[in-house]
Each structure stands twice: as structure tokens, then as C-alpha cells.
Length: 108
Image 1 (spheres, rainbow, N blue to C red):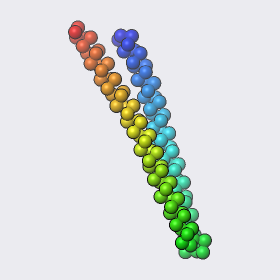
Image 2 (cartoon, helix red, strand yellow):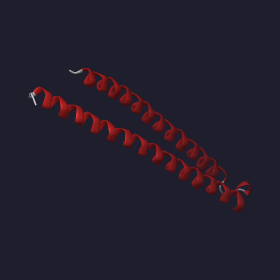
Image 3 (cartoon, helix red, strand yellow):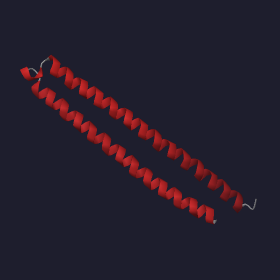
Image 4 (tube, rainbow, N blue to C red):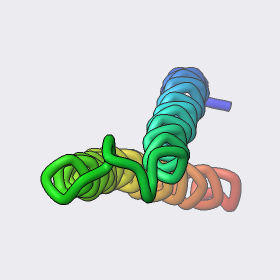
């Protein structure tokens, strides 16, 4: 294996490690945000039919839930796009290294 291939393999391993950590953080963040929204819905259900949950209060809760969920989805989509971009670069780089290695092994 050439020095360039060894260096590329080391960098790819580092990128994949970081990518796995980033993806894990995205998943954890999503889980935590959904738990928070679930607690808000449970609180709303607890007070449903009481004076504490009149029109304006109910509207505020729904507004918060929709706004929070929408912001979370937008944030996660942007992060996943970044992950997909890195994966695409890794795939192209790995294919190039394999092609170069195949041509080197065949004597071209």
C-alpha cells in the first residue's frame, strides 16, 4: 500500500469516526426534543377541560409545540444534509483510491 493510500485510509477512518459521533448527536438531540414535546402534550392533556386551559392558553401551547417541532425538523434536516455531503465525499475518495490501487496492482 502506498504512503498516499495509508494516509488516505487514516483520514477516512478519522472522518468516519467523526461522522458516527455527529450522527449520534443528531439522534440524541432529536430524541430529547421529542421527549420535551411529549411532556408538553401530556401537560396539555392533564389540564384539558379545566379553567387553566382556556382558548388563549391552549393556543399558546399548540403554537409552541408546532414551532418547536418545525424548528427541530429544520435543524435535523440541515445536519443530515451535512452528514450526507461528507458520506458522498468519502465514497468518491474511496472509489478513487480503489481505482488507483487496482490500476497500480495491474501494472498500469
